[in-house]
Amino acid sequence: MASPNEPDDGQTLLARLSTEMVRATKQFFGKGPTQAKSYFLDDMLFIVMKGGLTTAEKTMLEFGEVDKVRDFRQTFENQMTERLTGMIEDITGRKVLTYQSQVMFTPDRIVEMFVFDDQAGDKFIEATAEGQLGDKPVGQVNAEDVGLDEPSSQGQD
Image (cartoon, rainbow, N blue to C red):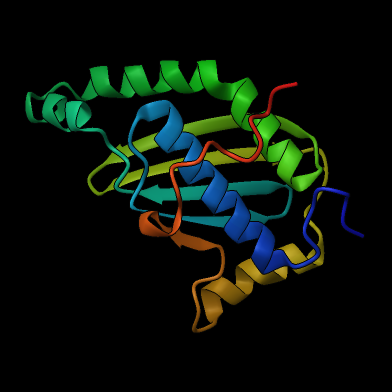
């Protein structure tokens, strides 16, 4: 059974998670990804974002400062942990035990990983599988589909 904040439909929840992560990234980094897609697997949620590097980060990469860009991203994400895990908990109605973010540069990808205290329901794992095996992109949003509004859940009280 879905929690009070959790949509009944797995596809709807995956799309909402992608949308809210794009909004949060736009709000806090000043630039969001061009595309995001969410995946449930066992007790984990993965949100993969494409095209999320800022102009300054791209310029620093051109200067060969890979470690500095990665270090800044990691430091920033460490500071954002409470807000992002709170946002995910509010949306899913589930407890996040831990969170990690990883940035990759070639190709430009950011992967947000959340570990929950329980396994995702079958409908959410099935929605992820549908997105991989079916013809439509379940849980995927493009930047032009996501407004610049603040995330619907700030993960703060």
